[in-house]
Image 1 (cartoon, rainbow, N blue to C red):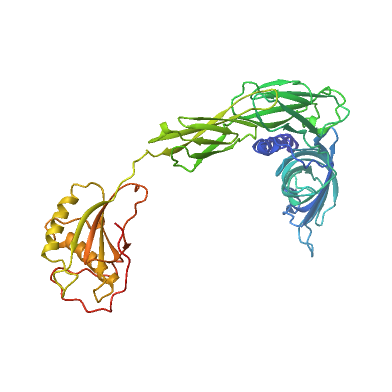
Image 2: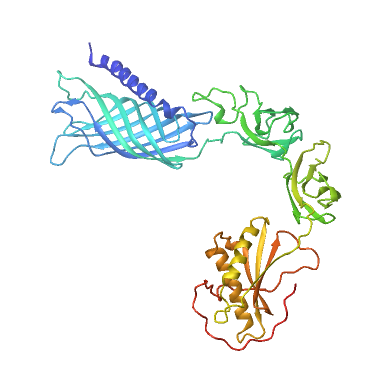
Length: 560
């Protein structure tokens, strides 16, 4: 088999390997990219493995080289381009060092899958190879190239060619040993910068949709509208609507209406689709409508959505208060209702009561208690009702209450005179509770047990002839009596039910008055003034004589 017969097999193997590389890069190839240049110019470093023989031996690798190519992409097939490539590789050293210079000039077709990040490509080219081995004659020979590579898109005008691989077949027969092949199966590796010139990119069709208003109460309608972007103004356009809730009217127009009758509260969507209905298989002027081979394909429609919300009407928020909260028979109380409607709809107000006479007046009412309400609590109820305006009447109500207490009618009470206790038998201790007074007080404790609820006023008096301040001595006598009743008596009384009082000038005595719980009947009043027990300390029956005081002042007789 001749050496030339090997070329098609190697050519086919390399082509299959590059096709597999493109399949593995399918993830990137499937995405449309905004980088779709009209022309790209590549310049980069190139390394060449000649893989050929001459009479002085095998040609060594050439590490000094550069590659330049220009690719023009078809207007109707943005991924298919015509490529012209040239590279120069200098491998001849000084002093007749064995090596070769190689130049390549080729043209062909390139298929590139433009994607947002990585763009793989394959290409097939044919042309001429300039072969110039050291100390041998140079020759121009035909060459065939199968190659591919991968570009990294970093910026719309500029990409980085991460790797470019080319398998190049040619041959050299001048002064070639008879026992070696004439074929040079060269491998060229390159990397550099790609400059993207011009652009075929057409943005995808888009649209926006909106609804007015965005929030409604069923069955209020919603007006929706949609606007397309990127459409050819010369092409016919079709509109269609679909909604996730409600009924759509004018569903094939740019402006439509959503009928929300019967819709439950929640969030819904009106979906718009705008379609370019220009015939798919003729006169297409947009590259985004063609596949990689230039065959027309359907134009993807633009889709967008308008969101809207159906709200549930809420009842009013109300609260009631009464002033005052306790009234007597025949007395009025004012009840005020504070009401707020969440929808700001108008409201009406109603009032009712479980008793008394009620006079409504909008958001307030006046209640007057009657005689039959004594001893009871009257509940007043205020109700606010919304009235939905427009052609969709709807009412919602909320109520609040306030309570007014009417105390029972009570009879007045009378102060009872329980007698007195004198301090005349012991001039040295005129404040002392003597034996006679003790007997009176012991009987008083038993009497208090049968009198019910009330308090005991102990009113102390001072004789006008006593040479001490009558207020001080009278107060001391009332405090000492309380001390005996609560501390020394056989049956002790509760200190909280006894009130020492000063009666002023009178006899050498303390007088006892029982004051029942309740309102005093007209004309009655408690006798004397309250004694400050923090200033008058109590003394028991066995206490030492008190120091003498100044002469007593005159005082009015106690009221009886």
